[in-house]
Amino acid sequence: LLGCETICVIFLNILFCFADKFPESYENFSNQKPCDPDRTRSSLARATFAQAGHLMSKGYKGTVDYDTFWSLDPRNQPERLLILYKKYRSKVTNTKKKFIPWLFFVLFKCTWFTFTAGVLLTAVFAFITISDPLFLKLIINAAENNYPLWYGFTLVFTAMIISWAKFSIVCRSDFYGLLAYLDVQSILMNVVYQKMLKLSASAKVKYSAGEVVNLLSTDVERIRNFWYNLLDFIYTPLILSICLTGLTFTIGINILYGIAVIIAFLPLNGFLVNTATKCEQKQMDLKDARLKLMTDVLSGVKVLKLYAWEESMRA
Image (tube, rainbow, N blue to C red; front, side, top):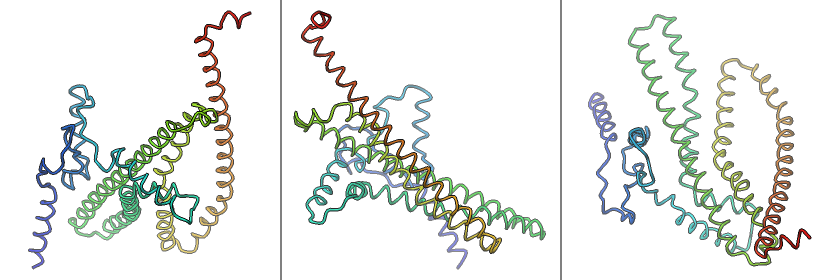
């Protein structure tokens, strides 16, 4: 019975390597471009990013242009993301109890699928990371106690499979994190540009074009980088807790010295982060003033050239 179950499991794993045929009438793509292969390939092909091999081969043989790429996934298209943003933002702004970090929750609702998938894969990767020292311990134990040769080969082969799985998981986690990063960038840039187009004449006097450019180039970048680095905020304490737990069982009470050193450096790290934040904020204020001054100078030059006032200004 166990042999039959093993054969069935192996057969199912082989079947997972093949994807069902994707019907062309499932979705109507107006641009007639090929569908996103990440939605039509098998699970093994998606885990190994097999669709990138064909694209790299085509780029090696010739020029890769816009028509070469496949169509964007409907979940990541700017039109859909902007509709979702306006929908969730209207729900937040219409509520009686308004809270300050509403933008974070609205962006999370717009990108919850990719962000949640990245978080789950990051957690799985953190737990799989501890397999390396465990397998190393088993291999050393097998070599010291003269275990059978097949036992050592089994350990090495299993460690290789787990290492490949770990690499695939971390790549997929970064992929989902990058998707959420780009979705947030698309939403914020669309919102800022639409707001700029709707500004009145009095508001345009208050907010110059230089400040808007700085808003797009600096503030949006900070928010999207924060969204991408959220995975590290989840991975770092998780892997730190796992490592400290393992070291506690290995070296015992001596782990407290390491924990004391980590806690001692926390105030220093906080001071350095606060100092860097203040310096960056001051730099952004100076950059805003510089861009506003440059915009005013260029506007003045444009007026001089438009009315041909160069000679009168020289006099």
